[in-house]
Length: 126
Image 1 (cartoon, helix red, strand yellow):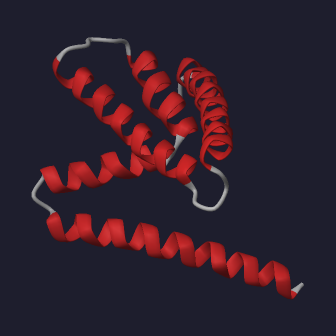
Image 2 (cartoon, helix red, strand yellow; image 1 turned 90 degrees about the vertical axis):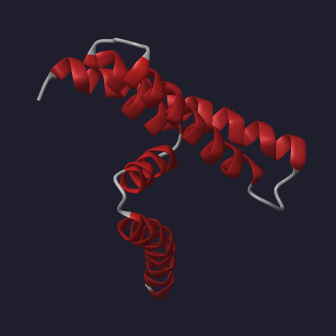
């Protein structure tokens, strides 16, 4: 484990988290709180950004590993972990593992929402 990688994640994560907060607040003020437009935008734009970074790292940018980690795990991960979910699903699809990709996507969404519901029920029961 390299400390430079940990610091890259921490620095990028702080920037991404602040960006997520500001974008969410901005969308809430602009469009109102009745629908989570901010979260939807964050998930889509974060996935777009992750795809741009992954593609550029593969064919255009020869950057040090710490910079790659700063941008993907740090900035994108702090902005939205949905971008990592999207990249993982893409890699499964790209490898021809469509069934695994479908199962991963379905399980991630359904089980994550179920876990949140279960946790809320547990807290409310206390």
